[in-house]
Amino acid sequence: MATKKFALNTEPHIAVVGDVELLFQPEVMGDEFLDAYSRLQDTTKRLNIDLADATNADLGTLREATVALRMFLVSLMLPESATVFARWDVVVSGGKVVASHADPEEAREAAGGRKGARVVDQSMRFPDRVLVELLEWVVELYGGGTRPPTSSNGSALASSSPGILGKGNSRSRASTSTRGR
Image (cartoon, rainbow, N blue to C red; front, side):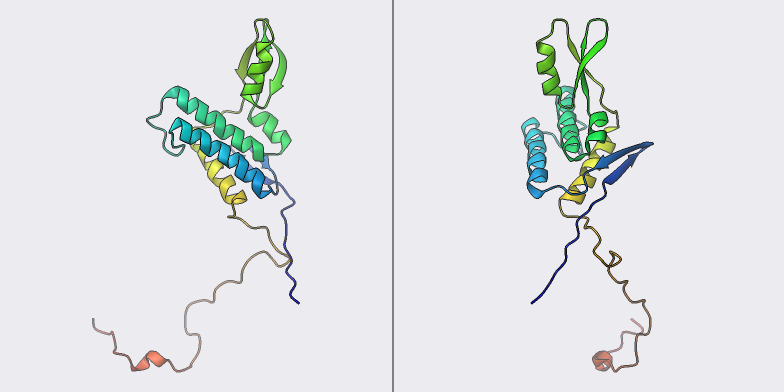
C-alpha cells in the first residue's frame, strides 16, 4: 500500500508593496478562490476591459474594474490587511465617520439611510500596475502555481552540473562528425 503525505501552508503569504505588508491567507479552498475569481472575470467581461491593458478605457469603467480587482484581492487577504486595503467610510455632516465597510455597495446602502451622508473611499492607493501584479501573484499562489514545502527541504534536487559525466560508450559515436560545419 502506498502512502503520500501532503503539506499545507500554515503561514500567511506576504506581499510587500513599498513599506506596506499585505497578509494573504495561507490556503484558500478551491471553490472560494474560483468563486472570487469568477466574480472578477464576470465584471471585466461585462465592462469589456482588460486589466493588464486598460489604456483606452473610460474612467468610470476603469474605476469600477479597479474596485472589482480590490474586492477580489480583499477576499483572499487576512482581516487585518483587508480592513486597511479596501475601506469605504460613511461620513455625515461635520466629517464624522459613522461606519466603515469593506464593500463600497454596503457603504452606499448604509449612507442611503442617513440624511446628508456620503461615502468616502479610504482604501490604500497603489498604482494600477501594482494591483495587476498582485492579481497575477495571487492567481499563481492559489490557482496552482506555488506549492507548500513537503517534509523534505521543499526543493527538488539540483540538476547535475554539465561536463563529463562518465566514460561509457555512446551509441552516437558512429554518427557523422559535425566538426568543420
